[in-house]
Image (cartoon, rainbow, N blue to C red; front, side, top):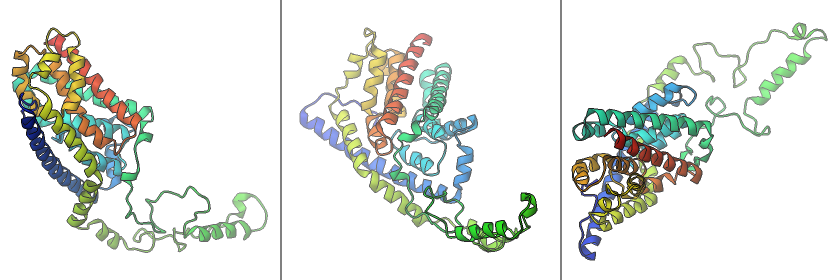
Length: 378
């Protein structure tokens, strides 16, 4: 985002023009980022099996949380451009807790942010900030997982309408309704019946006759060289080495972009209006050194500002010169970079209210607590 995130005082027409130009800029930027990132996520889903993603980012072990934090630390996304990657992880059924850890760390803890923190704040403040972001992200992910907030994810956007359903699809979940039988169930049942009635009465282990194990399609159990329905191992290997379908990835990215477009437009419009009509001295007035509530105020007003961390850092010197404490600046940085109103509007497409509010509360606690810590150590 444009570093000049607070508009200078001017006439109404100037403010409207500033808001309009910012809206065009934001929409163009987020559209390009969203299409590119969502298409790349589609490519990753083609090449990386969901089982692999689930193993790396599972929610049961602590390793998944650190892997998710590392992934967030490697993706230099803003709060809004993180959404396509988030959707990709949810579609791949990655652990819910690690996915939330990624959502928190991606805009706040990435190489670009760290590279800007070092010359602005020095090594000590940068290290404290990194440890704070990492700790809060992992603990928050674990707590949300333990409290069962996964149930507040909307599943409509994550369903794959093109999923194949076949007799031998081992990835398909078993039907919940007993009446919904698979195409192989009658044969399997018939085999069990024959096993029960083909021998005279006697002990159970004596009545069980050795039978040929059956596969899911009723034939004899395939040999190791063949697949579930008789496919050869060579054919299965060919299937796993398919080339990347760039058109499919592009179509998936475009479809996701279209479904999110109304939310994106509303989000960017709010961000642009804030940019156009917030006076340049507003933050210095409400978060000055004489205000004991400067840190909480800075954390709260940071959310509607929609400013990236890397866009705010170059302005730290001027804000401090105007009397803003380091803690208030850090609270503003975490609040605006971690949970902006545009991001929340887009997340509402994925999250129900309890999960959305829990996410906002996590960022506010991190921003306020971090602000107070930085005021102490500064």
